[in-house]
Every structure is written in structure tokens, then in C-alpha cells.
Amino acid sequence: MSQAQATGATATITPEQMQEREAISIGYQAYIQGFVYVKIMLLQREALNPSYRFYAPINSLYVQEALAKPGMTDSTPNADTVYGFGWFDLSQGPILMTVPKIENRYWTMQATDYALQTID
Image (cartoon, rainbow, N blue to C red; front, side, top):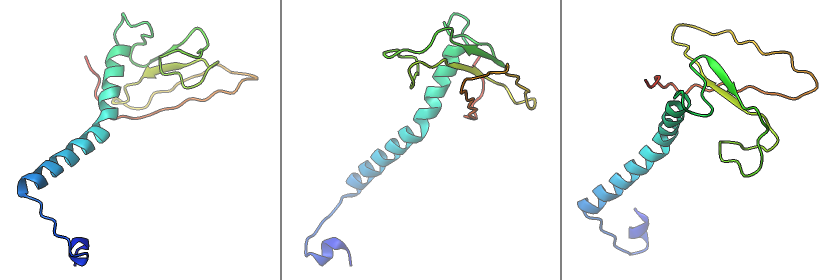
């Protein structure tokens, strides 16, 4: 017995209303699932453009020359932090990365696989 039947209420949904609700749900899920991939594709396209101010070719890193500051709009979740990024092509196998010795500083490196193809 449904909640509507248990309370004596009657609720009828037409097939058109059901289709509309399903379409809204599918659209919402597509947005939630696809937004990250679209955003990453746009970031990649921008970052691999030689005229971009933070340009780094495939398999290299760009490291900002100055610390991030409050109010910056370029993906800077922390102030007073040096940021860098790069796009790596692992389709031919692994890449060995070397990092200079960093003393008396905390540092991290994050690698993320978005399973995207390079945009030409």
C-alpha cells in the first residue's frame, strides 16, 4: 500500500508528467556527472594554448613565480602558496618525474586521472 493510499489521498501522475520528471532527473544527473569532465577539458584546452599566461606543454610543469594572494581567481584555494600544474600523456607508459630537493618547506604533489584525450 502506498503512502497516498494509506492516508486516503489520491495522487495521479499523467504519463506526460512522469516523462517530464524523468527528463529533469536525467538532465540533473548528466550535469552532475559531466560538469567535471567538461570543466577539465576547458582547462586543458586553455593551459595547452601557447598564448595562455600559465602555459605548459604536455609532459612539463608550469610553476607560478609568485605566491597566491587573497582575491586571485586562478584556482587558488590557499593564500601564500606557490601553485604549479601540468598535463601528462601516459598513453605510451609511465613518466619519471624528478623534483629538486626541498628543505625546510612542506610541499605536496597531486596526480589526478580524468581519463580525457588531449585536445588538439
